[in-house]
Length: 99
Image (cartoon, rainbow, N blue to C red):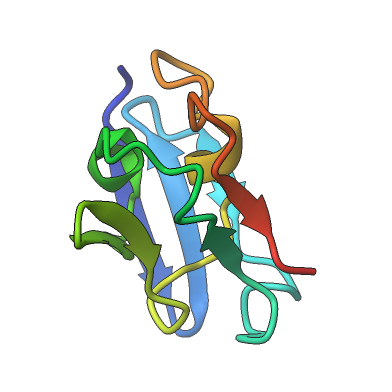
């Protein structure tokens, strides 16, 4: 898995690989807290893969299920879609956009 570095420029958040290449950039959606990712607790199997891969630690476990903190979430989509490396996204498709 690639090392991810965070670069904070005022309100812009850039995720960069160890080679300095942009992994993801903040977008207009990231500043809209009504648009975030949700976990379907009926589908979640509590594997914690999404918890381990979230670059900003916005996902925690509650009662054996993943929960996404909308205030911390930067809407990068890694939890749902994968990181382009080893993590291929939620194995049971329990994570989705709420918009």
